Image 1 (cartoon, helix red, strand yellow):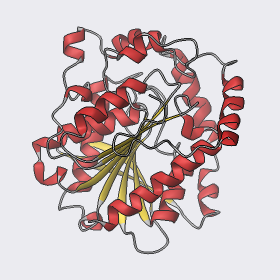
Image 2 (image 1 turned 90 degrees about the vertical axis):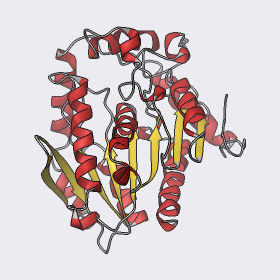
Image 3 (image 1 turned 180 degrees about the vertical axis):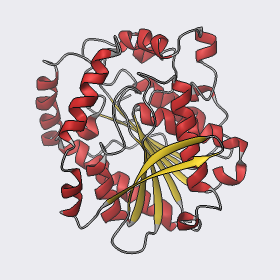
Image 4 (image 1 turned 90 degrees about the horizontal axis):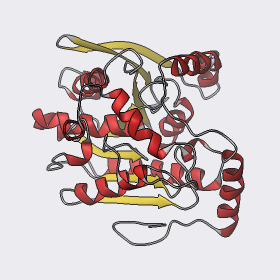
Length: 327
């Protein structure tokens, strides 16, 4: 399934030099333990370290002539904070961003580097959702937060973004929450119709574990594939596998009718590879889908200093610009 592209069947343009660079980096990753949710203490420690490393984030944005605004938005009885980064000039669209982190770590600031590049290259406003984390909140609560943010942004009452195309972006657990949010928006068809596209990186779409998760070999990196099955159970206590497969909790089994076009990425060395491929197969029955499995790439590859990651992010920004131009 290497270099799989559902629409064109063409390989990802990675040179031998790029592949050698990626493989060299992978050898360093192989020395690190694979991430696995085993308790609630370790994510709290990682989260504290993340926040400490983000001190001075405002100064980093100012280097690009940008600043972030934090707002708390509410719909009904639910409210959620969002982090908004606007372009220097008039915005041509909006990106609704869902960060990753295995549902237990992360925040809206962690993707600033990616979001600044989108703001400056695509002339978009990025709205990042600071959803609650599963160390203290059931995963359904995280999904409620993300749906709340989407309903607020897409509603007629949100004057700032009322006439702008909206692209939904998510990675890993954030891709799961993005897909789950789109499925939940089917309750409000007029809001779903406002979404111009979905850009999802290596998401989790089956909370019982796809075949590539359950049978992940030692060659996979970053994530502990078989261990993820137990992590899914920890995140959804009291549910059996049949209940875990119900959408939108497991987006893979949802109804993708009236969904927007999508661009999906997964890494060849990611245990979650099948999640993306199977989601693409189902999604493309209702809308155009472009899907790529990146050679010699693990889970989280867009965060790593490789030429393949750089090319994927550049292509993603081009795709966002093209989607907005078609609206």
